Length: 476
Image (cartoon, rainbow, N blue to C red; front, side, top):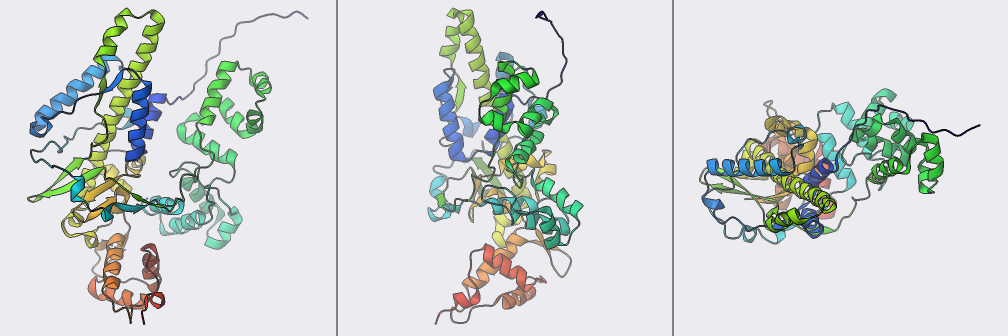
């Protein structure tokens, strides 16, 4: 039998998320410290990135001048190296004009915030998932199922209970439990509540759109042991791949997170620097993005000038680095614009909070902000993760402004965070020798805020505030 070589044409559709788009999405959810580290790393690795001079005239520019300047910068980057950038498909249009270029100058925004006000606790995995659950449009039955699922997760994010156990505990049918489990598995971090590593990785592939590639799905489903043992020859033969294609698949798999809950659970306190400042000026609120520590990136003109003397191989390398630098600059710009738009929308919805304090928080969910700024809920969720805003009443995480609703006797709604703040105020004013019981607090809320609230709900809110029961608060 003779060996022969044959050529074969094959058409195959594959959905690919470009590295640039993954980078843009990643930048959205980075904290301020992580963002600074990422930028410094890119500046060290990319010779075409450099830090430009801060614009000292920014405070005197008009809105029209700012818009014209931003438009010109976008045209320069698009014409140079980013002709294929489709930002409208990713984050939508950003048409609002930043109001941070007001004529008012702030000498030191950080000095206006006390050291104690920057004290914050890193959220646990359970708290992070419950936040997403309660501020999504689910029914009370679905929320009860979701709370039971989240309560049965390990520190790594895996589900420790069987479906039948969840059915018995919640009293719901199996279809409802499985449906809610699938929804939670697509919360942030994606892949949480999976029952094993294979399911966790497959969920992430589906979320990124890679589940349409049967080879990739098969590798994750049945060949993780082969990949771990580096039995590549078996895989190359079975799937008729060359080593280059297999390496592409392996790169995608290595980019997945097998332990989605691993980054949570650290209870150590952190002192934070706000990402946004909100100041009251006359009868309006001015939003200022905190740009301190974030370099004003630009393409290096000196490095660009040297390209003409480079060889073809060097020019190819330079083109790649220039494109990477341009995408990073645009990604940072869009991140800041998104952060500004979300904060601006929160200020509009929670104006009473910025006027009168935490007791005036109104009910707010992700969909309200997403509809207001015409973005997807997942974008709002990412940009509010690990971002903090300095307000006249202290520093708060942006997620703080999203809270569920409690109904008052007259039919109007009040935010749960407002109720928590009121409970905290009541307990701070109580007699240490005769502290208020949860039942007494519920009666006081009914009288002063006209809210019909159960004793167990007061106990839940008190626990979330980290306040002990009345017996433990009593002082002799």
